[in-house]
Length: 465
Ligand SMILES: [Fe+2]
Image (cartoon, rainbow, N blue to C red):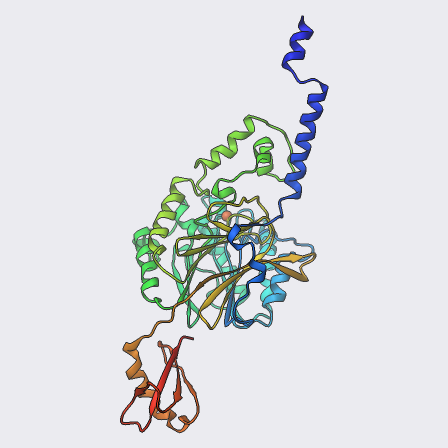
């Protein structure tokens, strides 16, 4: 009788074998499919679509979470980046935070200081011969992994980076302030750098009148972000921060099936300790907002809602971040959201939602700005030791509309036209400060712009630079 009950309620040896095979297949799937890219249906023909020029006017390289590089042989992603940027003078490289794992830059007296410096130097040394611009923003790991010592760790890293690079202000925003740090990396490309961990940090940070920051609190920061848009209406706009506003990775609540079965893999990737049932608690805790580094957490939601409501109506805008260790592109309304957090580590990522492309692979993103006004993105992944790399996705993000500033046209033109009279027989370029470039062509009999008292009519063709 006992044996009958056992046979009915528990799997026999065939069933056990079947279950074992299934688990094995799941393991294989988990291992073998992690590097396959996801492409949304409408962009699956991306390989046959190219920009209208082979030479960008300016490029911005985006790499995040590079703070855990190999210290023995050069990290392939960094090697590929170094080779790509050398010779590309018209460019900028931006590290998107988590520049030093696991807990940022320690005090100079700490026993771990030398090793932590080495992780940073591994990244900074790629700029030895680089003629472009370099910026680093901070991530949660740089803030002493969200602990009490975060503020001091950020200031130590800023001092070290700027002393090492000797390129003036490279670690931005300054002094662990929230930002935005605003600059133009090109006359037509405005950059705003945000310290997103400042919004989430629960220990001491610059805040209020005594904080020594231009933005005293969240409202101040948002006002300055609005100013960024007001002052750069006709420019490309790039916002960089560590925390993404959209993600299909762990921080966006995605955990693959294997993480529910072997949850300790979330902590250490090879820790295959089966905890079926109970193992689901941790991923679900994260998924439903238990950790402030995840998008679902109420503090993160506050950061996301304030930034989103400020930027969502603007065009010609890219928001780029790291944090999740993979490569992603999302489009939400008018805005392109880039996740490029695969500088040295990897986490799983799913497709779907508003994602056009996702991939669990180390690499970086490159935004190319063309003279036509188009902005394209490329995702680069190193091959082998990083001597070579391949583009795994390319996509046109937007095309900036041409705008004419009539208010500055006449005074600027009158000022410069006199010096150019001798060249009127040939097309000439006039670059006007804070305006647009005018391409003047002498002409007769066409619809023109009559600039009396000058003796000929001039057809004015305007184009942005
Ligand atoms: Fe992070």
